[in-house]
Image (tube, rainbow, N blue to C red; front, side, top):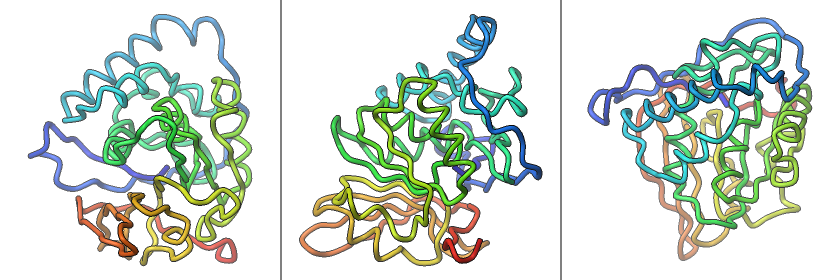
Length: 253
């Protein structure tokens, strides 16, 4: 939920994904389907333009593009923060509790890197607004998502239900370091906050042949990595340098 990428125009230009700037203040966490005006041509047109920009930035997976072209991203932004000019812009946007909804590019990029197959079981660490979980579900995944901030977990649950994804995404308010052992093994794991080391519990809960994408490292020295678990061994492939907010244990809050 916390990644931010600056201005990329193709694969050459975007070498660094910059962390989102946190915006202070907790806002109204309610979610609604919105008015007829909110669901009208203005939002649809901005969503279409977002997809055009994602193609321009180098996103090629049609399933991901189609999913993001269908999901009403603005409805995952609490009403107190919703803005028709920025809801689909390539930037993060505040959702309260010093958190943001990730910019469209980072959502598309990380989803594309997972190379999801229909019916796969995905664990997401860092539910945030619920938008990334909705994208995963729209791509055909069975999603289990963990959020450490209870108020955000409640907001995401309401947003997912309001947009029709309530049955395809299960949300848990809890410590992402522990994973969700009751539903293991997972085909894929996506982490949207940065631990300094790969959490052992998440590796254990990843199935044989599964993959995980996460930002890894201390502040200022992070990189996006893709982890694969094959033949009892774990391999880690570096992707891009990044800056994300740190992943925290429940006791550290």
